[in-house]
Image (cartoon, rainbow, N blue to C red; front, side, top):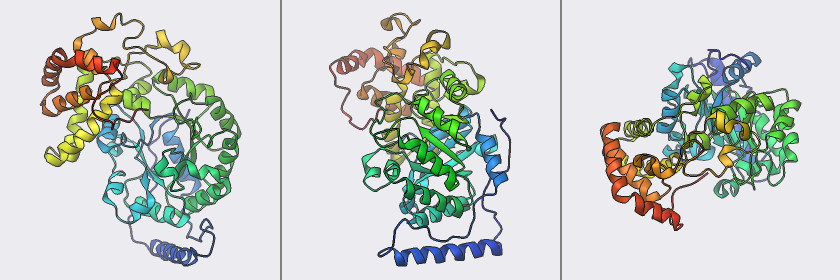
Length: 450
């Protein structure tokens, strides 16, 4: 495990040097050449760009800064700026990745796509931030990568080759890139050589089989990827099977670049044990962070934080403050809050205290994120004996989440929120629990569950 270092960030120099001007002319010429040949030539042929790839010592410094850390995964919807601020500024997440942005729309100046890549205030804390893009064309990826690098606010670029969502798949992006390993290798080589940032590549084990993963990892290393992030499931498995850490371990043993393992990390001790057992350079968590944003603090301190009901309400109220800071407290800000906060509560409600002394022995063989945990777990006693606000926070009703969200919005302090939540629980919790028991989680169909 490498020690965290404060190496200089790899970014494009701010001075408008003649080298920069030359690089831009080369880039523009390559893009025009590719555009002219697009209708009759191979769309995946590598155009010739000025080589802007970071030098070896810069890549080594980047990997040293990220090694041994627990990374925040790129999260569709969940990776919004307020949530990334919460985990980075409040709980010490050192390596975070943006939501996926479509390179094509970035280059068209789409404000929504550009907003996905905004950085938190973690730079002053020594944080490392990566921007994830989706593309299947070298010129497009290079142009987007240079635009991102010139913002001066990003430490690395990540290429999404694992997203299983149909909207991404049908565009030939995300996990669809795994269908043609040779084309993927050319794509990665072209972007890695043409962008002045370390390029990481996030993949799944394959489409419907793990067989291609080892060959794909080899080709990505040969193409110049700085590191490979491996989600230990296939595209077809989505989240229905446990992450295959044995397959990840095999790839680690064969490769000479850092491998970051991803999948089923809910507790600090699962992250610690996966790093030790598989040999990965670092771990990444997505759903685990959505359920308990303080997992990064636990990992860094190597001990559990089991917050009281009041402390958890304080965390959620802090997220409310960050959302209002980011989006405003006017009508538009409230609309965005109403879109995101109930969605987050759909994950927060899955939190359970899982001390290592009770659950650590089974976690490697039976990942806790994939386990069926009751409303109360071992050591908590009967669920009905828990404080009524705690019962409310664990309720899976989307109507309950909407009500909690509204209370958070209207409460100036976490203490006021606690009082209002208790009143709401006394008035409506039984109804919401009956909804869940009947299979009706509420009026909204927007909650995306992992």
